[in-house]
Image 1 (cartoon, rainbow, N blue to C red):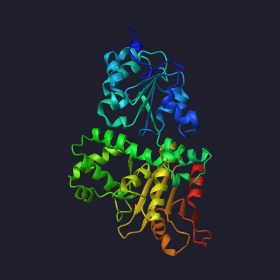
Image 2: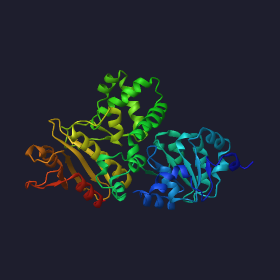
Image 3: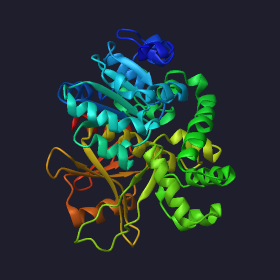
Image 4: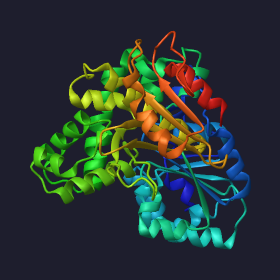
Length: 409
């Protein structure tokens, strides 16, 4: 029996067919162009395998089906489909049409066969994969794909994608950035609850091999309450009553599944008197607020966490900037240090303040950084309407800074 006959229509789509359930979110209501579309098309023209990686529900499958409607589709996240595919993976991988392997990390056994298939036929664009975990962190998967696949990250909507939706550029600050709740804000609260229960507490807990759900739930809440703060694993371990190594492992799993990211400190050999502990941020701040029981009362924390996350999503999609923060042992801090990846030494120091009133103290961190590193641009991001002339410091609103940053790519 041909292997295609073993799969139901819900498991497999033939060339030219569109899975309505996966695509309806964007196509049925509206399609929000994704920043990475050009990069994906370019990668498919030159490489035999392209992997779109990012958190669940960020739009990976919809994007591939939109860009490549003639590709065959197989979901490896379904246990029944996975079992059928693994009975004879070579038959599947011999497909002459482009093949979408959805949630590829769910079937690591297929990757040695994929490696062999690519080595036998390196035509570009043969295999299109999605993964909601970092595929390179698996030794077996990383070895199989080394030199054979290109990886492109797809996170929830970045600020340019939100602006292109025509719903107001500053919605990145007020609305969840995942496609479904963004496009259907009335369902945001229920969607966030379902996402936490279905994907974070189930998927991540399984990968992390969590034995006590109460400990893990408490860990997530403690982490959410520390969103945007320096990472102190010993304190978190003490709050959750688990070992520090357990906290380290759980955070690594959250990173690998694109739920959190670490903002590393900026330093050089000339700046030894600085803090070298990373900060932890949630990729989608709304999930942190949901876990924590509501947004913090401190609007400065909300602005910083949301803006840093928005820039992180943009940087991941464009690969145009590396992100850091800066803090001396004396407490002088700069919330964001951005280094251009394609413009040599272009460096931006940005301090984020939720205020409309200027005081000289707001510039303490920027001055400390400038004395050591001479950034190409020093920015105070705030709502100060008429800033005084202060050296070379630029004053910009959050929206104006994001607009400027996108034009600098």
